Amino acid sequence: MGNEANLEPMLRANGIARQVIDHIGDKWSLLVIAALGYEAQRFSRLKARIEGINQRMLTRTLRALERDGIVERNVYPTSPPRVEYVLTRIGRDLSVTVTGLCEWARRNLDEVEASQRLFDERSAKEM
Amino acid sequence: MGNEANLEPMLRANGIARQVIDHIGDKWSLLVIAALGYEAQRFSRLKARIEGINQRMLTRTLRALERDGIVERNVYPTSPPRVEYVLTRIGRDLSVTVTGLCEWARRNLDEVEASQRLFDERSAKEM
DNA sequence: CGGGATCCGTCGGGATACTG
DNA sequence: CAGTATCCCGACGGATCCCG
Image (cartoon, rainbow over all chains, first blue to last red; front, side, top):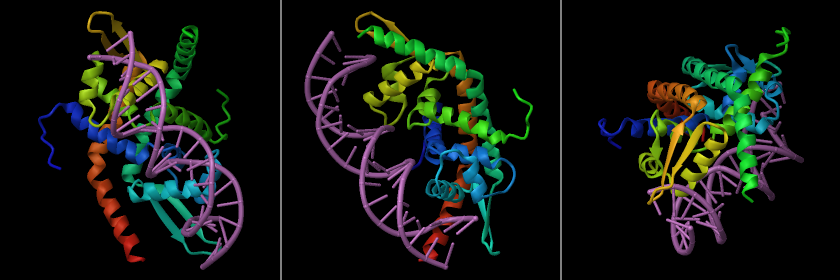
């Protein structure tokens, strides 16, 4: 696995980007990170906040993020049981760039959609 | 927008994050954006730069990015045909945050992997 | 309340071969 | 060189039921 540091910088960015996608490129991770924000949140709260997710996918996503050290899970053995999730240090760090992505989308969504319509119209004409 | 600061801000972030993932959440988009950088690149160059991609997936990814207005496609009808791809304005804008993601990964990859090992060991013990 | 277990569909994406 | 056309598989993810 030894990487030569001198190969094109893109090759390294390549592997790095791979890692990013492997960790947060699935359907729900970004949403969970965004929904967590900076305060600890209970499972049911998260589920309510994230439109369209079900228990299973929320559990799986949280487990994966916990495994990556992005989310911390705290169980309080009260009755009824109470489980809270909170972003770790690197999780909060990540959420900053995630926010950057969301802002990009907010800034450019209109333009993206306009581009799509144009593209689709041109595609239709050729048929 | 409405100054009802009380409507959970997350609900909006929710939809926005959805958009982001729908556009660049697949396996190759981030890699293509990173590989494009700031100069126009030919198809074959990109293919060589992005380890593990094949023609079909590179074509599909480029088409999707072109449709979103993130990548511009320029055909020079020489012989042999020559096709160059370049990031658009919003594409370059996006690539900034993509770079941010990659830097996050570079900074924290060690910690993420350590966390994974810990998590996996603990999981194994319980069985 | 916060999960785990199971069943099952779909679709992303890989391999390969062909075309202009 | 750049792109299209088929075939096909496995994982991602949804629904549902059950548990401590």
